[in-house]
Length: 383
DNA sequence: AAGACGTGGAC
DNA sequence: TGTCCAAGTCT
Image 1 (tube, protein in one colour):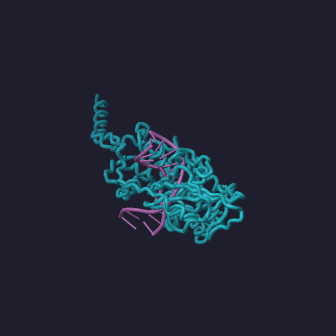
Image 2 (cartoon, chains in turn blue, red, cyan):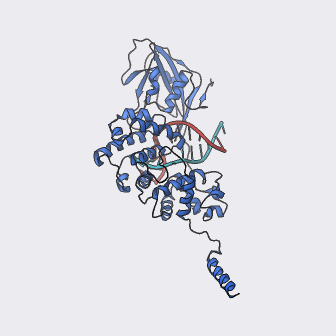
Image 3 (tube, helix red, strand yellow):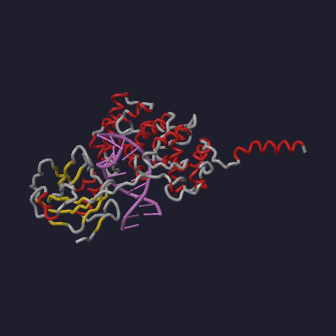
């Protein structure tokens, strides 16, 4: 009797503070336990308890910027095979790196990747710096990547805040402020959850959680290790977060592209300017891409005199900030034809080795009536 | 500090 | 089909 009273009193004393159902603080341990059971397997991710070398962590993180895990996979393998060390990559030519990167997008990453490899070799004796500040000073490494490489490669106490982490944290705390203004607050809250050990696992766990459970649509809250402390979930508003500032859409631009084939099977190519869109990538000659492009004037922009014929349809491509429609002209010229200034002939059979961005691969596919790199982007008939 | 900077996949 | 978005950085 007395014992029962005591136990009852104790349980009340213990439970009362939680009675409010106020969300308890999220525990890193719960996330890490979930991660230990559900961590995804990826080419750059070491087995449990092991650590990926800094070079591989860095390479994967650069490739993963705004790019899906699935897309990155083959590129990561290719780069690691071709250039197994940062020294090897530093020794490569920029053109070789751009050609290997072609198709991945955001080509400034490839130029910075190359510059960063050289900086690590020249300024750090080939050893990646193990501090956030040291990493931040390298080209192509910003807030996110410095924290990611620091945490994953060196277990530095940092939390990388990417789209996944933004989603997880804004839901966890029901942050009403919109992105990107809420970024500092998110970073602060995420850091407050960081455990004293296993920074790298914590970072990857956060991202895995965002990628698999705490997804943009239909998050699987019932499977979430942070189900209980999640404020958005408690309010049934998990899909509302994160709030984002509205983005405006770009205006359509049009232009013409010229595919000229020499009788012996070479096509005319050139290299784009050092700066700006698709900088230093390869393209077929073409007009400027403008809002007021006039098809009637297109042939005036042709690289050389030839019997141009306009191909039916257009090539459609959408960049991050504007959609593009390219009308393609084709011609055949004799073997004796000279390449105009700043242009060169390239064998059709080797053209896939060129640093051709996807939009240019679409143009060539259109001209040669071959399958386009991306399905469903070609309009066959247009008139 | 807002805009430039690619691409492919999911729904 | 169109829209969103994916491990962002640089200027």
